[in-house]
Length: 263
Image 1: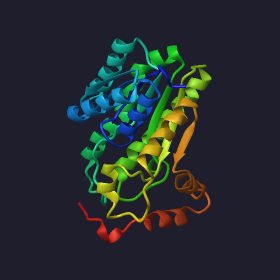
Image 2 (image 1 turned 120 degrees about the vertical axis):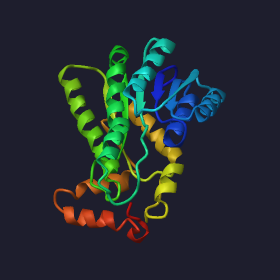
Image 3 (image 1 turned 45 degrees about the vertical axis):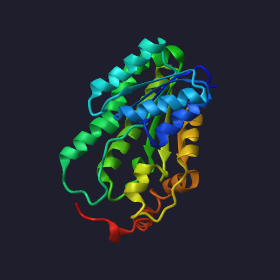
Image 4 (image 1 turned 60 degrees about the horizontal axis):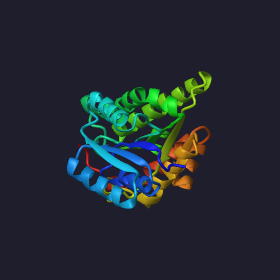
């Protein structure tokens, strides 16, 4: 289904984004990847070409600047003249710990984790409308239920759910044939996640390679939402209405609170 399709993947120098780029390469897609670190992007592009990508390019820069988000989409238009799939996967750095009252940090994180997603969508939408394409938004279970010790991050993920779920409704109302898939992820064994959480979580991480493939499949099949790993993410959403206190306790018990430092 994705042979010859034109795909942007953000946050693709490592982790889930890198694995998505490799899966797309094996599917013979045209790929444009972005992240901050140019040297890492170069290596990913080289590997994508080795795996059989129809073409592979990169643009390096920071999504803290929404102008860069628009630049990435422009690069795709120059290279291919269109776009079939936009995979929004990048995140900004956020600490793990009790909320320290830093409003500026939340504002900065919203720029990267939310506003740049909106900016890229706005820029890409004319091409996606023409191709009847897809938008894939990589989010988190922390955007569906409150998770302690990651309040700024969780806020940005709730924002993604609210915006893109509303936008999907508008597309349907206005007969816009562009699908939006929201990916609700649990703990994944990326290097960043393991470095940040391995000493404080009691949960087992799911494999990033399988997660990346499930994200691509969900977008290609134009699913409304993806829950991965299914049981440990989807099951949490049965509790908020009828057992919210139990849910909160369950979530808190998943942390080794004694290992979490106050910032």
